[in-house]
Amino acid sequence: MINPSVKTTLPTQRLQSIDALRGLVILFMLLDHVRETFFLHRQVSDPMTIETTEPWLFASRTLAHLCAPVFVLLTGLSAWLYGEKYQGRGEVSGFLFKRGLFLVVLELTLVNFAWTFELPPGVIYLQVIWAIGISMIALSLLVWLPRPALLGVAAMIIAGHNLLDNLHFGVESALHVPWAMLHDRSWLDVTDGLRLRTSYPVLPWIGVIALGYALGPWFARGSDAGQRQHRLMVAGAVALLGFMILRLYNGYGDAPWAGYPTITQTLMSFFNITKYPPSLLFLALTLGCGMLLLRAFERARHARWISALAVLGAAPMFFYLLHLYVLKLLYLAGTALWGHNHGEHFGFDSIGAVWLMSLLLAGALYVPVRGFARLKARRRDIAWLKYF
Image (cartoon, rainbow, N blue to C red; front, side, top):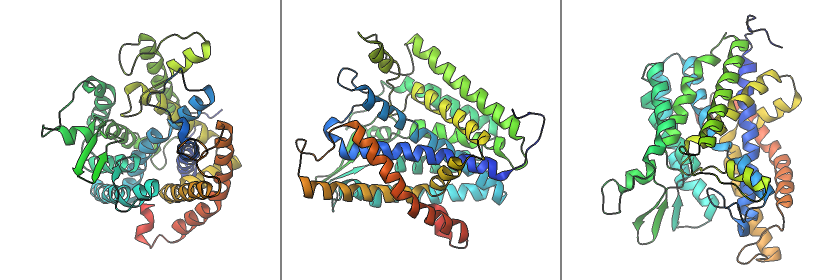
């Protein structure tokens, strides 16, 4: 047990745990994207339909719920650490704004093409990279707030945005487009041949990235590791307790759950939470789990698997782009070899095959990602590498 009264000043401990947690959710993301590529004939809704979703498919999708909240929280935390390194909110504000714009452009170009392989595109999906980019741009302004005010903004957005669920604006309204991007997932017609899908409304994610930035002082150089781990444990436990209380109350924070003929289906209903946009209960559950995992990773810092996960987490954008193109090429190869074996799609027959494919791909992608991470660490003189 770590004694909270003993100060531990190991920068590798705090930073490696962040990269390791990012690496873990990258693996969950890989699993979900393999599912979305090779299990399209069993696509799930949001929230999922309990009657038609088998437990293993439900569990696979639910694991992936950790990805976006943890990514965005750690983005905010990493922004604070960047500011600590370069001594100034002006520096971090400028970096956040530029990198946010970079991510938005990346989403509109390389990322969208990886999903569709269509030129010119008929649809552009504004997904997680878009949401992170816009959130970073918003944070570039929010960093100037005092920390208590920033925490207040984060809490207000995360806890209160579900009050806006019934607010909608028709296409004739000037607020239709900005509200679709902020909170109301929708389709936007740009031209006769181009539509935008606001898959990730950004308002709740701005709250999450602000929360991550506000947690930054816990990870300052020379900070007490035992105290940090205690705070992470308390924050994670409070978030999970809040989830349980509100979910049992069943009146705010997400669509209600219901009892089913089997215990398994009832539990599935209880944990069937909304991601688009992420509800209060979605964020309470996933962020609570994320903070407890971050604490656990710090305490297990000497384990080899922590170092392996940290390699993946050290080059997240490189992994993201690489795995999307690999998956698309594998799908095209499978279609060319075996045809559309599930209606209009080529796919696996079971969710077990999705898990197996994910494990094989994780091993195959580890080597190039490790190589890029080493290049990134070695060539700090190449400015553009820090964007990946």
